[in-house]
Image (cartoon, rainbow, N blue to C red; front, side, top):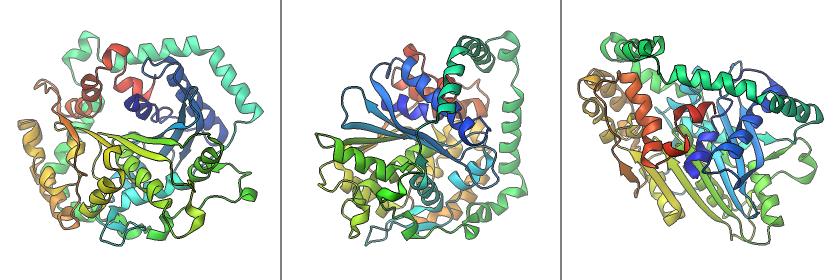
Length: 412
């Protein structure tokens, strides 16, 4: 269930419409998944969002989040955070690769810190507000539903093409795969790899202060423009007859951010500033389900996460998923050997990455459940990367029988 809800956060990633038209597309796509996909069908409803955010001048979203509520159980909520938008270069740069510097965790008295990418992503999630759809938006959503059959036909046709079901596709790499293969080769074998430290440290131009992460609950007179997540949860806490059960979930970058969001919600309840207290009675249970995540922060942050959430911290990592090797130095060093000759060419790149991040002591929180996805030596490197990061998790969780795969994540 958590993995499916995490996957639905990707819906609408490719839409470039602005404003409310974009909100309609994303909302409809998430609702479609909640209504159709077997692991959540009939059991979950949209409670807040989805809300998206873009970097200045960007064409595609860098962040997205929504809250689902278990049907018939007002107190059970899941906060789903989107991972990296694959078509948004701004998200790759700012959401993933600003790991050459860190930001102190504002509620910690020790050395706990998160990467600048995690801090920036968390700040964006905290600022996002969900507004009820307007009359025009509801009409547009109903109109899209009316032509759903035609859209489904197009989507199924696209699925067949993307899955490579034709003989021609089976015998030749796609242009996308060839492009990614060339990029990997260029980065790992050319002199461009030498400036990896500067690229990972590009955060020198991006500053997030610890206090920027201390979100306050909105006062009543400021809620007309919509509710942010903290204010929404406060309203839910006050309205629910039972203590809230808040689970935060995400895949990939979303998995790293899910851990940061969960710890933020836990720490905010004990903050000296009462304006941060979304759960005044301190009775809500907070859990996290992170899939395929890189490290959100350093060893002290990982220890704080484990101590604060205890048995509510759940992580699933595929040891053959290269993303889960970032950004812990000893894990990074394993990458060139993971796919044999296919990843051996990454040795120089990996060495530069290790050089850039080793002193920051990035560390996964303890207690993760791990598995090794099945490798296929006939796959090109980009295809293996995608399979291990997405479909291998669906296989491990036995979701393929429900039609859950990488394309279901991103489209429907």
